[in-house]
Image: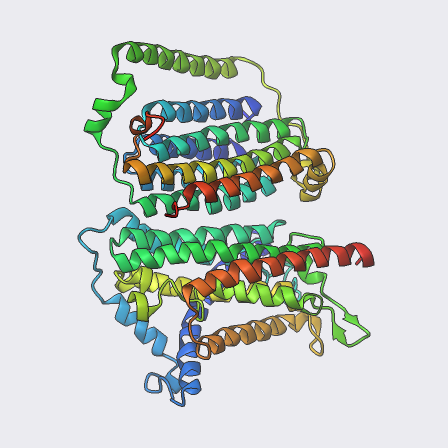
Length: 101
Length: 177
Length: 341
């Protein structure tokens, strides 16, 4: 059985589910950000596979943009993590429930 | 089984195993390292999909830049391992209502995945198009598309990056007395 | 079996061994050159002119005890040197080092003298180089030693900062050569201007060559940019806690990285195996001559210049080298557009 688009879509769905589970289960802001990266990558895989299926470069172009957004998100997200850690000495999101301290 | 089929299953299994490791880890530095492994496996899959440029950018941008940033922050904050007792005490999923809803959603998610896997094994699949003439694996074609069809989006991302850069510097800076 | 396939497999083995030997040769050359620059003789007892000194060193390291600090993270502590050495060797596998050859007519079709002729070779080198950071950072962190941690943090900051200028300098060459394949880039440098100046990119890109070599020295953590190990400040930086073969792997990685950066510079700026006088099939001699000259430059630099200060290093990288490389790229692109090279 040859590998087809469907295989890639299922793999991407599994990865996305793992990322989602990570966001719900983990209690560490850094791991939450990592789980979001897993989800973004699952979506990237879909785009590349679909681009291959329709023999178009557009899939890869969109992956390029997703990477840019992921880089921006990681930079800002980690800056927020550093700022929060400075105030609370914790990375548990439950520690950041008050709006002002 | 052809080379591509074996490659797909090996790399796919690696990606899934590494991603599971990322979320099943209490030590953040191991999570970061496992995620790099997962990105490597995905880069391999991109090569199987005739997209070498995307594969290499995946390594340069994700593994080489974004993950170094994560590692840097983990090292800088000297992040402690997640505490299992604290997890039990403070996790919102431990409230009875939330736990039931969460369990239901998880079952739904697993069912959905099972349904998808079952479906591809029964349906006739369309094989990938033959692109031996070049086409999508050419960097030139990719560049042409980005700088013509997607020129506006490209400029928009550059503004996004600039905003993110300023935002990161402002947020992470120590407040001056 | 297809003889071409056998030759290609043999090439893998030969390149790997040659890299190992080149590291040994570099250690010897380093000791000799440093000695000569300081009016000494260097190793003389082991073998003719001390040539066997690096092998004696390796044997010594083999029989040393492998030490690990009690509080170190055991998995990452052993993984780090492996990552360093692997990435160092991996980068070289896309570097071509000679013209296609049939081995004096032994083969029915010419074989490219490279382990893997990839059409995005330049990007692969860049990607592998960016993975090399992990070896050093993890070594620094997992040793659980403050000097190592400082060395690791310095290394990551320095390598990320200089990677940008490195990439920008590469991009200017890619614009000139209109390709991402190292083989095509080298072949774009064949021929002469006015019949005697070889068409090497270094003459079109003097600023780019300067940026590439400076960033290359910083990327390989060599003096005057050797802050990650700066022995007067940090004991030995990230490899303070390493001993025996784990230490040898870091040592090996440093020298192989130097060879790789010099080989890439040879191919991108100095015309690879193209050169005057020698016939084309002896081009490989030109390649080795250029490589040796660049490697000697590396050693010369280390034993001549004192170490920078860390903040001046970062200022130099971000406020001088990066803007310069962006300007260089813009000027190159404008030139290519205007003259239609």
